[in-house]
Length: 114
Image 1 (cartoon, rainbow, N blue to C red):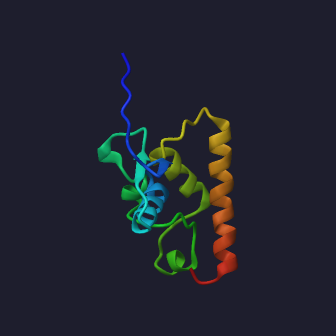
Image 2 (cartoon, rainbow, N blue to C red):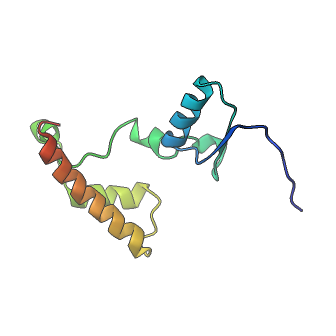
């Protein structure tokens, strides 16, 4: 048995991760009615942001090196596979994650002292 619940909204946002929450807040501040819909439980609102402590996915930065924090694309990928809920059998997701961590290292190098 399914039920339908009508929620009056000007905008519907699919996804209660950090991007969805920030977008919803901006729209609310602009006076719009917003419905934020997510597949997960209310306790997991924010997606992976609560576990990232608001941090960015930067890999092997000069600051990490100065602070003697060991990091590498391989370590970042291993962390992502362990905590990011990626299915290791899904080669597209894993390939994308691998390219992301490799590219993050290049971007940090281009930006200088991150």
